[in-house]
Structure formats: C-alpha cells, structure tokens
Image (cartoon, rainbow, N blue to C red; front, side, top):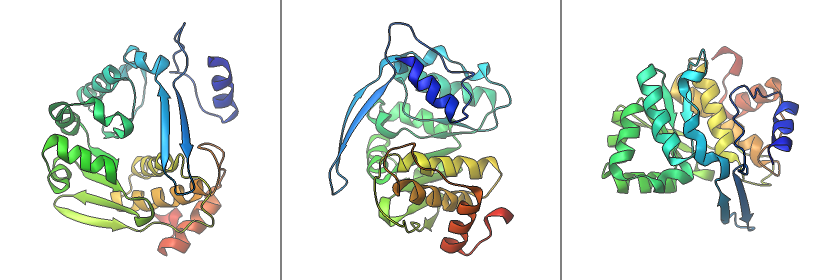
Length: 241
C-alpha cells in the first residue's frame, strides 16, 4: 500500500530520500474515533514501522536537530543512541510509545536527549515510571515541554517553570494532529536558534491553526498568516525572533 502514501508526500513537496519500502508489510495505520467531547479511541497497526531499525542516523547528511517520536521499539532505542553518538541534539517525544519502555530505558532516553516533549497524561506516566518529578527531568535536559490542551503548555528547564498560553482558535473542528503541529512549530523554532519559550509560542500558534481543520494534514497556512497570528497572540514580530 506504499504508492498512495508516496504520491501524497510528493504532492506536499516532502523529500522521500530516506523513506524505506518494506516488502510484504503494510504502512503503519491508525484509526481514531473521536466523540464530541474530544475523547478518542485509537486502533493501531504498526506494520512496516517495526522495521525502523533498518534506518540509521548516519544515512542522512547535514542533520542539525533530530526527533524520536513513536516508532518501532528497537528503532527508537537505536536512533537515540545513534543521535547521541553522532553529537546531534534531539527531542525525545515518546507519545503513545511511552508504555513500551521501562523506567530504566526511559532514563536512558532522557540522558541522551536534549529536549523531552509529552502531553500532560504522558508526563504523569513518565514521572511514575522513572520515579522522577517534572522538575527533576527538566534539570536533566535543556527543557521538558508538557502540552496541556486548552490550558496551553509548560516548560520545565533549569529548575524554572515557564507557562505558554494556548493561542485562541477561530473554531474548534478536530484535535487530531494538534500535538504533531505543535512539535512542528517547536522544531522550526529550535532549528532557527530561538530560545525554547519563543519556539513553544510558535508551536502554540501551529496547534491553533491545525485544530481549525479536519484531519491531520489538511490545513494550509502562509508565513504571513503565522506572523499575524503570532503578533495577535503574543505581541511580538515573528520575523524578528
């Protein structure tokens, strides 16, 4: 079933240089049922994702920042060590994959990572499994970022807590993919050398834009729109950060 996914990526202008096709396997698939209160039930088939360890960090060139998001278990462990050994900073974003790992393994991820990002539910699980507080974890990395839905997000870094407000959405249509949109903004900001709080403010804008559209990849935006939304929400010039 690879062909339509590959075509979709090409239409979006995304490079497929390191996209691996695994014969006799389906692409990872998630079916998410969401009710009017935004409660979600997810059915998931990992498929080819279970072969992610066949890809290596060293296969890519000119990498300035990485992210480890939910993936095959072996691949996540391997890529964390490869990023660390290569001296490439990365974000540990365990998401739904968090329950696969023991407290000791999670501490290894945290030890290798430069940033950790989780939602509030995942944050509680992470603290429970590692027997560390959010403040403790925030001291082990450059920053721990916890998203809290309509309550915004929170940065734990160097013993301090920075609250990032939620950007008001023009309409609330579908929360699916909001976490991914937030992380896209975070990655973009960090890649441009912004401070973590500025990157999280951009992330908040991206989450608001996403929630206004149905589906995870159907929203469209321009630099001008991002700048206007950023200025409206935070009173700052996005282009001057």
